[in-house]
Structure formats: C-alpha cells, structure tokens
Image: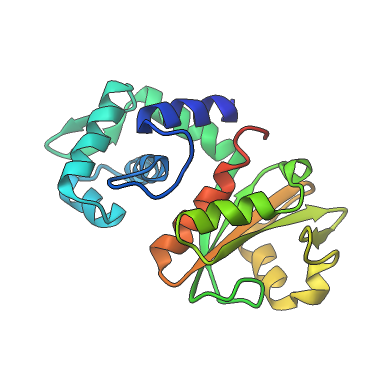
Length: 209
C-alpha cells in the first residue's frame, strides 16, 4: 500500500521525486494532507503554513480536489472519506513526526524525527536518505534502526545508545520504537526545512515498507 500512496501523490503533484521546484513539491501535497487531517483550514492559513504563494496553494487544493482527497466549504478545506482513508494508511507506517532537540548526530539548529514502522530491513547505508534531505535544502538526515533492542546507524554507529546517549534516550521517550522500526532524523537551519528534510528522507522508504 505505501508504494501505491507514493505513486498516487507524485501523480497528483506532477513530479517523480521530492525536490526544489518553482512552486511546490509532493512534500507540500503531503504536508497539506497532514494539516487538513488535523482540522479544516483556510487557503490563507494553508499558504502561511506551507510558506508558498496563493497561486501554489490554489493549484494544490485544485489537484487534491480533482484526486478526490479534499473538499472545500466556508469552513475551509477538509479531507474527503477517500482522503481520510489514504492518510490513515500512510500513518500506519509513518506513525509519528516530532521536533526534537539539537544533537551531535546532525549539526543543525532544528531537527525533526519521523518514526517509520517495520522498515529497518529497507535501510542500506543511509546515504539515500541523507541525499534526499540535502536535495530539499536540509543539512542532512540519518536513518536510525532499532534492532535487537539497540539503535544502529548504518555507516555511523553500531551502538548509537553508546555513541549518542542523549539523542537515543530522547527518541525512546518521544517515539517509543519497536523491533525493526526506523527513526529518520532530518536537520536544517529552519524548522520548516528540517521538517521537509525528514519527510524527504522518509519518502525514500515508501517504495519498500
């Protein structure tokens, strides 16, 4: 199901992979779904949250409506039953996203972490996730695998609890990972880019989980 979501949303966005564009990317589509899933939201507030222009927001809303994921009223935008179902499927794998404290793993002012359920065996060197984050302007990203009761960061650490004790303690507290889960951490100089960096890195897992 996740790969179907990925293909569908990329089709809605009109692009094959997340990255800088003149107006918006598939990550803005995903972020729109996330915001609207929380509560109905108006076009102006949506533009402010996404940090894109009114023209881009109109296009995003139009495409999501055409895809049957969104409806609009005087209350603002809200998910249709189809949109809610798609978002629920997405959240089954990518269940949590939180802003976390600064850490020694990624030297950035702002950091976001996303929990990807049961995706540990899909991570190779972690370079693909890092590169995806950098492509959208982040300083970097790391994939942290919870395996056999410990944290592993491919190409960085075979025992992250020892090498990054403060970070792993915090991740356990806020995300509560289980066996074979992955935590993607993205960092940047602004909170929005850090968030999009983590999302872009996570997007690479949608084909496989």
